[in-house]
Length: 435
Image (tube, rainbow, N blue to C red; front, top):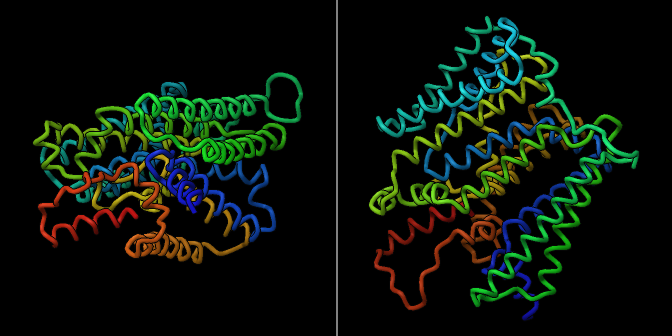
């Protein structure tokens, strides 16, 4: 019994576990296995996995920015329109003015930053709710896309397409795999092992509880096994394909934003504002600056996602970006973010995005129509969160709750809660939304 308790404590969100990583891998493996059986083994083929990353990387990029917006207590409905507007501006600049593709990318990021500054100003300094500001932005920039492009498609240069449709090149000896992808997988394995060792050393230096060696071994084996398997799948695709360039961009963004939200003052301020804006402001957090930054950052990532999509499609069109904001929001909430703000992780949002991507992909492989795909995705979003909330209310194991446990504040033993029963219930409900 003690070993079972140790396993649950250290693998599923205890104080000595890296619960987020293991929980993410556990969830993804379960979903992949489900569709692997349902599709007769098609889900885990190299070609299909490469296609999933290539097709849905822009949604995962949006989920990174949307997580920060939602954690801060806002919502952004304009991301699809911002992506479409940026795409048409960049495509027109490169077609009509022969703008080199590197400058085209820089122009797109600048457009996103300006749009984000515009919307951030209204939210942070005028006080208009983000829901209203971005709803206006959704209409404004959708109209701008159709006005600039005359409701027509605009092609982009071949070099520009590499960021959306390109792959890691073939270099070195013929090993039967893409060598750069193999090296990237090897680096990932080394990074995970080093991070686990470093975490154990830090806990020992702090004289904190350290997970038993056998549990650490299980956790490392699972994580490294998934990385090795994914590396071989992506490296073993048909000649000319491997890990997509858009996937590399996504990995870099996940690492950078995960570090920012977990290990920097600015990142912790976002969580503080979302948890209790008034208390955060009284503690010295610059509330307006935080709100401005998260809105601006979201638009920059939307611009990047729009350019990646246009590059993959080889042209910008009037239908780009439709309903992207809904997919990004769904990814964040499936990944464990709280509707009321203050809770959520970058890695959780990536898992949520992959859930939606694998749902789309698996259902398409089975020939399910787009109407039923939307119905099933909506039901999955509703029941996934509702089931997890129910489990937590019953005191049972909660996947999303376990992923969020490192962010939940524990009261010292014997400390009385001065809040009334109704206030306590209200705070509990806010946490339950995140699972």
